[in-house]
Image 1 (tube, rainbow, N blue to C red):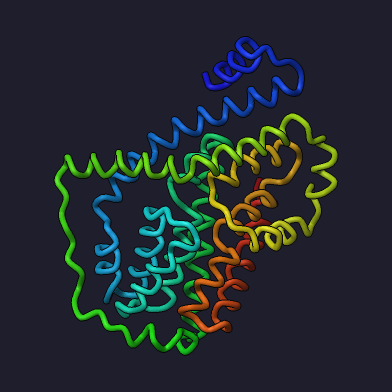
Image 2 (cartoon, helix red, strand yellow):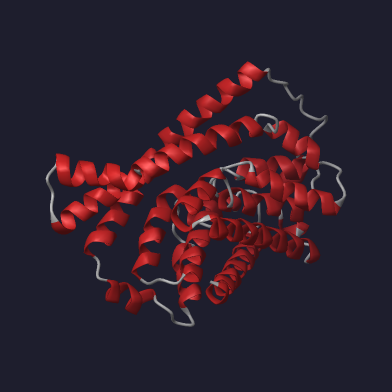
Amino acid sequence: MFEQIGHLIAFELLHFQGRLGETVQFFVMDVTKIAVLLAIMVFVISYIRSFFPVESVRNYLTGKKKAVGYLGAAGLGVLSPYCSCSTIPFFIGFVEAGIPLGITFTFLVTSPIVNEVSLVLLVSMFGFKIAVLYVLAGITVALLAGLLIEKLHLEKYVQEYVYQIKQTEAATVVKLSHINRLKFALENVWSVIKKTGPYLLIGIGIAAGLHGYIPTDFIISVAGDSWYSPIVATLIGVPLYSNAIGTLPIIEVLVAKGMTMGTALAFMMSTVALSVPEGILLSRVLKKELVMIFFGIVSAGIILIGYLFHFLL
């Protein structure tokens, strides 16, 4: 259906031909497909997330056994679609509440990597199997990063003032009515589309250009099937700052042009999980040693996941 809409607009209404027609068709097809799927999925997940406000997340994780805490942090991170920078306030709140550092980092990694946006786009572009494997890989990276940070006993590298802020009592959780939950979900749909719309248009615009004009041989020669491709992709992705909706349309075309799935997903995970702005913000609450350790552990985990995808797919 979406392909037919793109064809109708590009070739029959605008009367474009050749590569330009294919580029416009791809752009229209992906914009309509992603916008519809995104609106539906964000509404459903937002309704579910209305049962898990920030205060509930913090209260739930406080005082839990470690196994429950880690799994809970990963699960709640999936339901909390925040970018790598916007998770910093949660990090501070969790540390203030006495939640172990490893559990806190698990949430910090999971939230930007795995969410309804990435799930919708992955299913629509690569199918259910790839989406599930990506979600499992993202959660695995987050859990391993959190566990390793816990084992290294790095609490001394958290800035002292964070521990000095005391949370005297559990935050009050306001219960919403069914109507208010629906209202919250609808408002969140509009909020997500408004915030991610520019990324969507820019990402799909770049992807459409790649789809129509960049030769396949060029992509394969730069980032094809080399043994070092996941490493290079991760190192390139770490300094960048984007989200799934801006990155995945480009990934879709790069895979179609010859980039391996492992390399493509390593690039995406490193782009959405780590960034220079995140490192700067983290340095306000962590000492530089822990920031560097955190970036190193997560980057290594992403590279390993990239190789795993490389061999499995």
